[in-house]
Image (cartoon, rainbow, N blue to C red; front, side):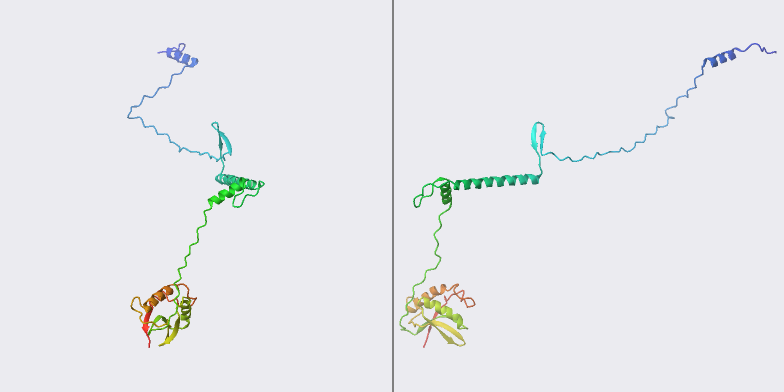
Length: 251
């Protein structure tokens, strides 16, 4: 069968017309995938947030500033204390200047004896005198001295022993103390020691009301006054202070 070369096929004419008009067949869309075939989308990587902290510089407050319609004062603690001290010193200085100014007022006529001066100075003197309490009367703490015993004539055979000690020098101040109150004594050596006893002899020293008994009571009163009178370095005869005096018969 002979081919007709002068004639073109219909589809060839149509394809050429499409190519000339710029029409192209859209690409075939892929078929949608099933839910089971869809791969999970990768989560986007979150970069760590970079927090930038702005440096906040402390701004020194002003001494005087206006805040919400109010005037505020701001100052360091040390400055506030210094200002307070200056104010206190200024008040004290003004007070003292006022006192000096009052004292500098010319004085009026001399007041009578016993009367305070008039004017500001007189008022200050009166107030000072009223504030000072009257001096208290001195209290006499000196113990009463016992009556002196006049030496009597020896009529008995008993003496009163006041003390005995191993050195004679320590008995010397004691002898002078009792002599001051009229009690005459003597220091007698005896068996390697020294005995301080009365020179006067008594009939009885144990019976209450007898001459020797009364003398012992008087010796105890005078001996109590020897407390604190011993010279430095001498025996004080504490704590009895001759309250253990006793009578002894002599030949």
